[in-house]
Length: 259
Length: 353
Ligand SMILES: Nc1ncnc2c1ncn2[C@@H]1O[C@H](COP(=O)(O)OP(=O)(O)O)[C@@H](O)[C@H]1O
Ligand SMILES: [Mg+2]
Image 1 (cartoon, each protein chain N blue to C red):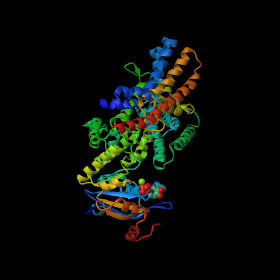
Image 2: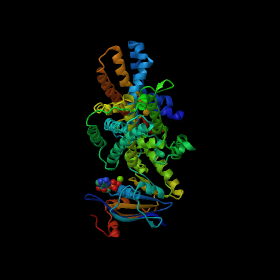
Image 3: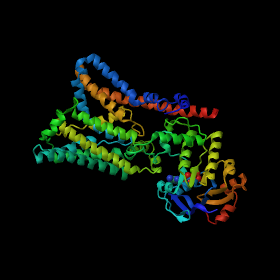
Image 4: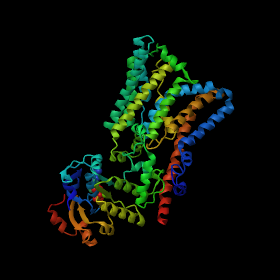
């Protein structure tokens, strides 16, 4: 497997906290990589760094084998990298279609489009399709997303990321607010996205979920990767052991002491 | 546009933004407050009779609202981004002083003089708008502080430039336009204001620029993450608001033929009150141009009505204050109820699926 997105030795501190402390990471096209670790391990920070939402203190990020500087979300988007943040990053007063196409509004046809008018119907129709693909429970495309349940918002955020990601999509705890049925829908969508040849990075605290879907599992602890496992060959005990540091192999393979 | 399924599910939980277009409209603050306006008009129509309902009276009311409406168009954008512009009245005074001074120094009544006067006012307004926008969007100083500062600075400079003496406008072609010119029986200034408000309303509700304005007010971080150039957008909005202040200054000069340096101290608050009475959320993300117009008419109608039925017009201030607070209170409770109710009810529904 050749990595489409690869990171080496990323560091980033917030005051005295080393959120990333020499973190490595890689993901290839058409594979699902699960990123796991205890709260505060640095998963969200890593995702932010890899999606242009956070400046790094040091480290190298390569995309398609070339070093890149992801200095803004737009830069990442242009490379085909999308993300569903843990805090969702939807505009609560806007409706699902407006959120789906925010910053990428479809212009109206002809002169009107040139003047900045939008094709709201087209955007609504496409949003409806995308949400239907997810088997979602979002029924109203005209209600503000702020009035919807956590699960519905989650579906909208996921639909948006999947719709725009050509290469890599990051999902930071996408199923945390979801019920059983919606979780299954999200996992099915992840598989479909992977089968389209897109790289999927999934952050999750649910070990069964991780074991079901991940081709590889990367474990983070104290701001760096401490272990990588093949999704088919690992088990819950091993993963939890690596997360908590009960297993020593992570430390050994990494060779550095955490700050 | 929703499916019938959507109406069934959503209607019970939050009426305001879903269901049919009619249901949706009926739930908005702007329409609710339009009802209040209608009641007020009906009240004065009954108690004040023909004097209140006359064309002349409404002509006068709209004449008095024209400048405020132009300022309100910009303020609606500003407040939807969850910003504020306190400087707008001072900017208007400053721009009118610059404009009147230039015109009186040039003398005469030619088209050239008037054009210079208009351009000067617009540039002066734009300069203050630019300064506001730069300090708010790029220097990240809170809008309240920045515009409080420019409120004071613009007015101070207006006094310095005029030495505190009001400047009359000699260019009669400008003042005649403001007082006498009519199109299809409508006075020119309100008509101009209407055109500006409609254009800004369309931009706000129908274009990308407007959509991004709502998004920034709703969740600035979300807007940034999808690649909207938030800083530039905010900068533009304050700049445009300054330009509208300049246009308002020209309209003011056309209407009254003189600057009133000390006479605009409440303009900013009147405009902000109108925007908020019209249902635009002071916290950003929500609002309408239509609401602002309704919000402007309520104080104006109260003022005129009180005079006509012989109530001390100072009561207008009291009434407007009450309407302002009541409007925001009603809006807030309705919305809080929707927010509280929605997730629980909908979650339950999902669960049963
Ligand atoms: N913006 C920030 N400011 C200060 N500290 C932060 C910030 N973001 C993350 N951190 C800290 O960095 C560490 C890693 O956080 P995070 O990446 O969110 O962990 P995870 O997602 O794995 O739970 C935590 O100790 C957290 O408190
Ligand atoms: Mg996290």
